[in-house]
Amino acid sequence: MARTNLTVSVQRTGGVCVLAVGGELDVVSSAEFAGRVAAAVDDRTERLILDLAGLTFVDGCGARAIAAVRHAVPGECPVIVRSAAPAAWRVFDLLGLSPEDRRRADTRTCEQCGTAFAPRREHARFCCARCRIAWNRENTCDGLTGIHALDWSITAMRDATAHLRGAAARDRARALAAISEAVWWVTIVDGTLVRYHPAGYDAVLEAHTPADRQLIEETLSGLRFVRNRMGHYLDPVDFIAARAGSRAVALTAWTWKPVPEPALASLPARGQAWEMTRYRAYQARLAGHAVGDIFDRAEEFLSLVARQATSATGPGLDSRLATGA
Image (cartoon, rainbow, N blue to C red):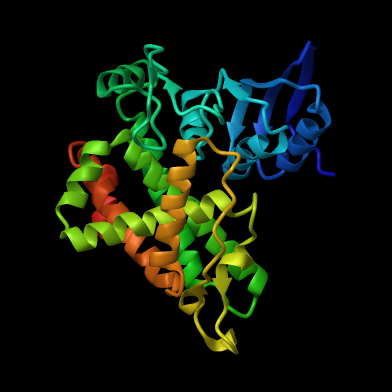
């Protein structure tokens, strides 16, 4: 096994298990992290706390490993994440990992003022816009930090979709991996824009006709369904239908498969409603449609929103979006 810079220490107090994670959680160390979690958690664990104060770096694979912890613990065991850096929180939150995983509740606690509230959007962390703005001011190192994060996220999304268009359909494993990576980055950018730039997001949506607006929203909702199910419940191959004799056919011409209705009994009522909405959107907008068409539609819309969100920041990202850089 390759040596890693990851450290994981375990402390138990009754039914509470604390895992202090330090160093780097990335593509090399993710498997080790998952193994340490599996070894530390058993049926006696009533609460699992991930203390990330010592975590110095996390990439996409590391973030997925953190999100997967929720599916590795006993059904009634809450997972609490604490002391992560603001940049890490953004990635974890976009995966649906809140500071406390309240599987059986339909309310959340505002991270700024502590008030209990019913979330209207799946990524909601604050009870009102005032609390969201206050938290962002207190947890952002400088005024451009969020824009810089959006900059590299947009770049990564474009790289992933460009790789998808150039991937060889004859290599099935790599082709499916390219689709999975594109799903990951499109939904990361979508979640970032919904959470941190809601006004710009809504403004771009409202500029479309009602029919186009519904098409865009349901396309992105369907991709979120793929992200949530892929890796935990289904594999990429379960979502993708390769064209018969498709070695000479572009990967983007492959289509999305219809999938069975998901089992959602472990989720709270609100979570079940959200996931069923995503599932229906997948069946309506993705199933039977070409992979390339779906990513083209999503990337075009998200690039427009990013341009709207950064229009007041001068040249930088805004100009790169305009030129396709």
